[in-house]
Image (tube, rainbow, N blue to C red):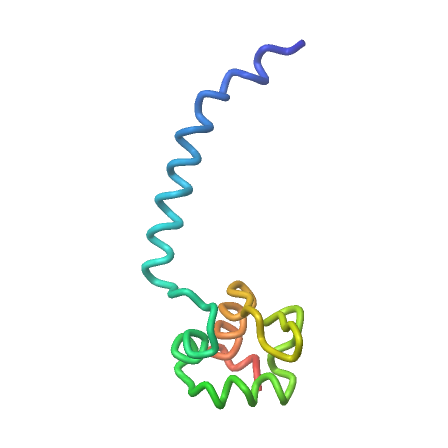
Length: 93
């Protein structure tokens, strides 16, 4: 067995701590995007506009949001952030 493969294992806790700190800093800039109101605020639109995005196909079920029994269960944060970035660059709509 090659012992060199295990030489850096002691760095894992330090790396995990660094990742946690970076995540905490990131979430100060990106709010929770769980509700229609939170998504609307993040995109600087109204909740009605979010409904229009869904109706018009700008938000795709399974990619931007998940639904259960015709009720939106959760918005998918990464997809909402990606949507905003593309919209701000003029790549959407």
